[in-house]
Image (cartoon, rainbow, N blue to C red; front, side, top):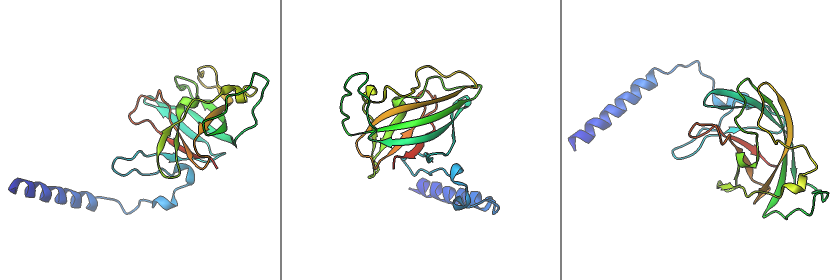
Amino acid sequence: MKRAGGASLLAVTAAMVLTSCSSDNSESAGSQPASDATATAGAGETAYTEVAVGQPFQISNEEGPTATVTVVDIEIDPTCTTAYGTPTPPQGTNVALLLDVQTTANPPIKYISDAWFDELTPDGYTKSIPSPSETCIADREHFTSDPAPNSKYRGWILLDVSNPGSSLLMSDIWDGRTPPATYRIPIS
């Protein structure tokens, strides 16, 4: 018992010392530009960076920055083409994302696909996204090959979400870090 009390006293003392060493010159989180705002995670939660349509954000892996990505457009329940057959209906709601990607000298290992996304429901649950019927937007430009260094790409990704009021969580599945950097994109 005495040992636990000593450990508690040590922890309190360490916290006081660390707090007294902090600088008063830091800006508050509310004064950060939106592009730099990162959600802070509590115990057991994953942190993610909030991004909006038209707002460029940098993706990276364990070796450094890999690309700048911009969500150019989001279409909820896009009109499907039938030029390549009848698309399978979604389990929930189809959401199409138009992305602009500019790679660095160290590009992502694999191209961006639906596998890079999870759904964050309005009530805070993270869900895997089922594979959508790609024939729905088969007449649009897609990402189909691994990215080359210092190159520009623009393409559509189709996602099947359970709730169009959800947000998308995007992370590079080949990142190599645990957890990988994650970006939250509101759908609507």
